[in-house]
Image: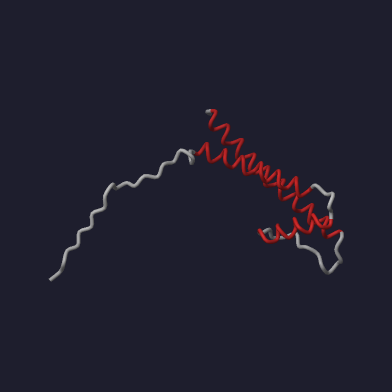
Length: 113
């Protein structure tokens, strides 16, 4: 196994770890928000999309101004993104050059009489 393979495997593990921790911190933020809300007005633990994440981050910063979970979530997401760049580098996506296979395109039109 070459060094490049080892770096690729470690990068994939880093991506997975970073995203798992990001989701755990998001769940912890939702728990903190739900602790301070009324019973009928809770945030669901299921389903993560970008608008919901923005809502959770904003609500968490409003309800827990001294809390640091949102920073931990951002740091773990940045770690996952950096490791994903490492995976792309190992796969050779940065050295990829897109060149057209044909230097000139010739179109012939034949007329049918």
